[in-house]
Length: 127
Image 1 (cartoon, one colour):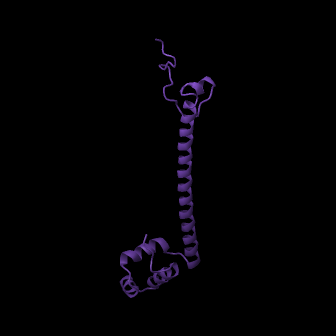
Image 2 (cartoon, helix red, strand yellow):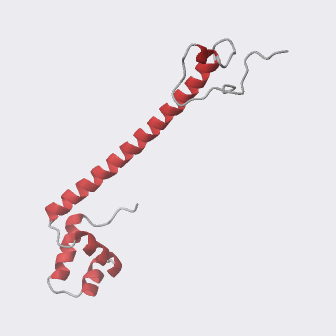
């Protein structure tokens, strides 16, 4: 996102100029901003004091940091689940090439189905 040329203090000062009775077009021309930008600022900072604007900015920064932290944690969690499911499949097929060996010992990874297991699977085919 493009960074503003104006600080919160400057924006509040510009808004106060307009509130003191000057025309919006004149204030915008003097400071080199469009009227659309001015009204966006007024919607965001209108009625705020400088200290409140600084607090708002600090809260927005903290919110951004926490969102990034949450996204990283969710990605890490998904990666761990993926690794755990792959380990569960490997454990089921590790017993001498017999996919049902883990079920014979009563082991099974949570939420993981072994290949070739089920009601139609017969580990010892009859010839």
